[in-house]
Image 1 (spheres, rainbow, N blue to C red):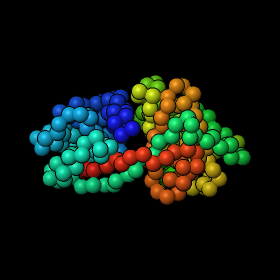
Image 2 (image 1 turned 90 degrees about the vertical axis):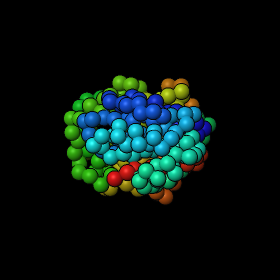
Image 3 (image 1 turned 180 degrees about the horizontal axis):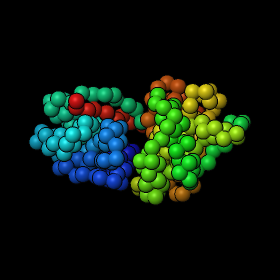
Amino acid sequence: MDLRIQRSVVANLRNRPNPVDSGPFVLGLDLSTDSPHINYATPVPGIEITAGDVRGLVQAFGTLKPRLEYVVSCAPDLEKLLLDAGFEVESRNEYLICTPSTLTVPPVPEGFELFEPSTDEEFAGMISAQNESFGGEFSATPADVDRYRRNRAKGGLQVAARTLDGQYAGGGTAVAPDEGLSEVAGIAVRPQFRRRGLAGAVTAALTSRLFATGNDVAWLEASGDDSWRVYERVGFRPSGQRLYIAKD
């Protein structure tokens, strides 16, 4: 499973608007933003990596912050090379997977609806709710909307959550599947709508849509114990380790 996950990350980064190949690495760049959580690199499995490759990777980032995310077992010697080059570990995360046999789809909480956004207004509402949920402001830019539309055009999914009187409450995304596998990400619920089962419902809705179109694995990462419990309740199970590492 580790290899499938890493290959899917490579495919996802190559779907970015401005991808760059740098030796054994792929940089998934979107020059409409300088966010290091969007612009980052990952190693291509099965290719030997040298200290010179790491130096070349740093140069390829240009003015952007050099940053990588990858499955540890797919490049076991890379961390030392990165640390020697001045990188620092941001976090070590355990990823979880879900299959059709483990998925449990809960009912949508009373007073809410889930839907796939299609208009600019709907995309902006969902993105604004996600931004606020992650500590930002309730706002979205045209570039944000374009980014989500590009993901949709390449086969990705979005599910938005809204109250029956029209307040955007949260949402989540799934990247374009690769080899029957997709990452579920950005699961978010605004503070005033939490503790009602909405995050689990959004996660399950995205995952069930992925499986309905012939995919067999969804994966994600939990940001803490609360989200871990949410994901486990809908059928996600621990499977492997990923590393986030960056250079200031």
